[in-house]
Length: 317
Image 1 (tube, rainbow, N blue to C red):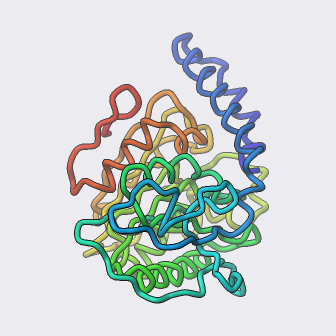
Image 2 (cartoon, helix red, strand yellow):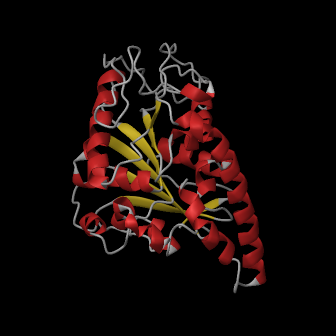
């Protein structure tokens, strides 16, 4: 898993710091290790495609996912698994049923959850349950292939996936929550492939928007090289993006040891409508599971430029 290569950084970073910061960092590191251990246990359940159950009745927001997910760890939410078997020929598992459904007045747009490097949809188990409990009916976790070697290609596959969701649910626009690399894939889709016509709000969690210098030995992987601050892809994202219609909400933490420097997880672009939310006291993995962050994500998806407040855990930067 992706965090294993960063454990030495997590441990070394407690040295040569003020006592109060070291104490906070030790607690955050301990929490990261606990989350990592839990994620190792549920990781296999996320390798299989999501299964999509019967569509829920209007107003039924208590299910475990989009359009009546199974809610059983192996198919946590309505997903990309088809009744006649998944089509994975292009690296995306998608549903064979693309019949558009009528949308209910006032219902939330679909939310696509996009995981990070060498991860899978299991990282979003707690977040998607939180969203489902608060009324989101259409929740879909996309597993892209671990063999993916190019962010641009992954963004093109995301584009096809979003078009399928819009056709199937009857919604014209969707929201995306992307963790780490997943947020960068989604941003490329929005900013460079015209995805802003489909994506209303893009929430990123610990995403290297300006590139990260962490884990130099991992640079042998093409996607890790693309996440460097001096890569062609990061330079492409710095280009003008006039008229971009997507709202960006980026969560970043001063204790995220995967982002170097930590401010790289902020969206800093003159043409983008962006809110950067500083999270305190937690690290990279905790961004996907912390209850306060989940509450802030719900606020971000429901708000239209309003302040995002998370007492005791996050603040707008």
